[in-house]
Length: 434
Image (tube, rainbow, N blue to C red):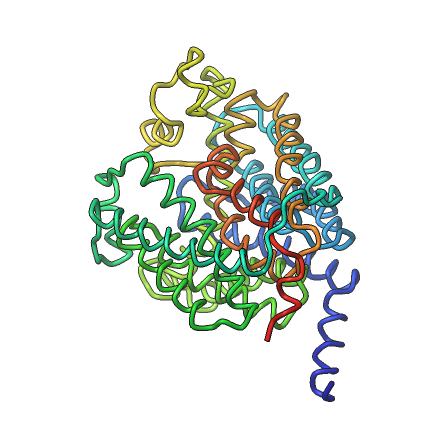
């Protein structure tokens, strides 16, 4: 090992120490709250008042102690997902103090905080590996990766016959509501873009097959003119960012930096430039600080307000259950929220949907615990795989889980498929890298 490599390895180890992680986690909590103060200047549904700021600071500081669990726990898929959930719930607790919506805000805040803690217990600490009853050989696994590419190309070709528009990101909303795909195409699109191609990219990149990894990024980008979502447009760049971060930092530090650095940059840009959201710096702040994080937190605020005065769903919003039970809502919850509040389709995480909407704030912590046990299956399925591979191959899913129910993430976006792929992977795969 060269001297420079030794220095880099030593620095990575220092940054991954408990003390360094604890400092980074507390700084991240502070940046999250400071970011929401600036977000309130641009978003009418998020409020800030200097009269209540010390209440918000006290709550955020107390809740930030939960983040220290991430300094103690080892990296896993649940670690990755759990940290994004922590950031979202911290944001909601801040928003909850200033909310002008009328609902039992103390109950909502306590319920959200307890829900996160109960979800984190299994997602951070349930790690025992499954016994591999089925394991592919390295040769069979290479064939599986080729099959994933073939399925992806066919899916893109078929989906393109229903929609393929090259439009600017700012204009996607002029066309997106008119998109219609058959059920099979819709599921394949979700599986391929959220799970199969990121998985293939991680495999090819870490195996040193750069040309195939590049092909995967091109295929991912082709989903943008098909689905007209910012999610599809930025996925290739996001995976590259995870590759760079995980090269410079250990897995736990990479997870923290993946939110902390973009949010800090957005906050610094908007504070130093005073830019509007229509400017280039403002668009970055809008994408990262508002759309990526603040919107997910504010969805809990809105769902708590709506379901404080409307019937609970008792999980009838799940498509397979809806025909079997009475449901007070004919339309999807995202559409119900759009019709009520006028903010556009407001999808939300498991805390809002399987939690507040389904069983209310009193029972929401129990559904969060159950969700944590489901997500912990990913820890067990990926046990024994390199942390960097798990990070990159699941890189899209934390963003998915911030914005859709767990049932949708597991089925429509293929999280369950990723668990299966991890389970059958040969653990010796990366040992034979050229």
